[in-house]
Image 1 (cartoon, rainbow, N blue to C red):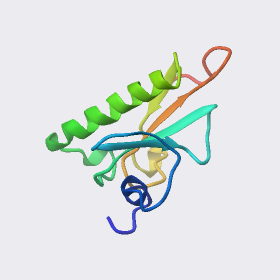
Image 2: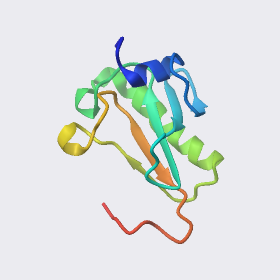
Image 3: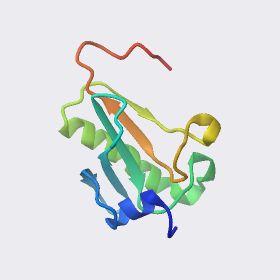
Image 4: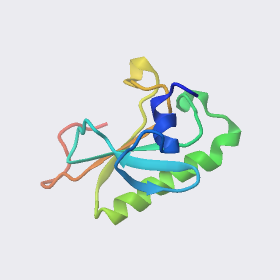
Length: 114
């Protein structure tokens, strides 16, 4: 999508502090972190949200989850949260599928539970 911020980050048109990349996914540091470590994993293919996934997107979803695991290991995160926000009512602010990777808390898990 020509005007999609995350599509432009995915292609490298807009720079990001990238920590992981493969043929399907880019993972970068969130510019407004909500945790000591807050990363965003995005597919390089435009998919609006989880609600727009099809059977043909299985490899992309697997790449997002695998990239999150690899990145967490590389960063030494022994505990972390993976969060998809879906739709405006679910807190999704950018209409491009993205996975929040949150971690880095030093004295146990954060107080909010899901």
